[in-house]
Length: 402
Image (cartoon, rainbow, N blue to C red; front, side, top):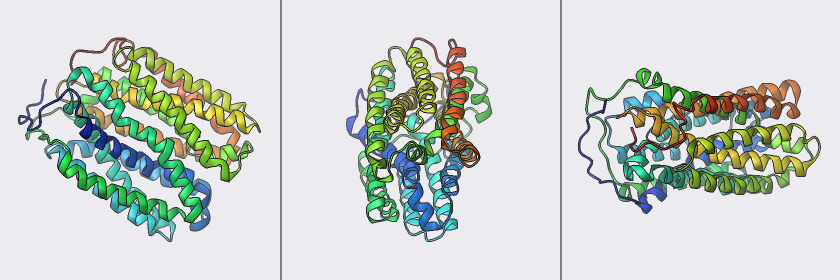
């Protein structure tokens, strides 16, 4: 069943580079905003006079808002024109980062992160579907790869740079800079991005109907369990690496190496996403699990810990792109935005739940237990890909996108 919409006012083009790069800048902003507290965990905890696991809950709360509201917000805003909605989410990001920069107490920081989570949910509910409408069907995978390269650049440069800035002149300055970036992107996007109509009233499939589609269900479940495992470790990567012998001052360089490895993973995803998507998913989930197992044996070897964390980053960044392309291909006709919103919720169930699970593990058993629990969960992701050989993760790419 294909949802009826108004004719697009902006036609698909083979490769609208300027628009794709601007949306990529939006993913850079979103990922940096979400992940920055991880690099500044100790600084924020000291300044707000709370524990590191408590600061980790700022990540949990942010991700929880995305998990709960990405899909519903996707449906509630389905009738809105796409460009205006995307620009509005960028302005909301700016507001949340301003509040975070002004926070002098933990409750205000919590409010800032909850607003950021709502903004993030709205952005990711429309981002993948918007990109899919910008290009021809045979280039969707590569377009998604380019756009989500912004997330890799965020991990490679945004989070390390924000961490370095926060350590040098205060963590609030880092969030103030992010607010300025968000406003700039909103202004440029209002003029540069193509516009597309939303759905007509009464059209489109319900969330439940889309989720019950077998191909969508397996992608969503695989995304959730894989990210749950990974972020149980990554949320607390700073204390883990410090427990392995890395100094706090060396964290920025370690995160930079992690991001560089992620760029390699993104490149690999770009080469395989439109050619061998199933192989790429199996390789990515397996590599992630192996890297986490190696981290469990890193002990007090900072070199081994940093190398294994970089390997995990390579796998994760490839998977972040691969699951976005997979959900667009798995979506029923006319339901690409809804399916992408559901997967955004699943992704953030993993991020928020991982932060919560990792906080419990960190408080109860210490940093060394984090990669063990994480590997058990990502192994379930490998099983999900293996199970979805016919529905969700086929070996070949379909000729059209839902």
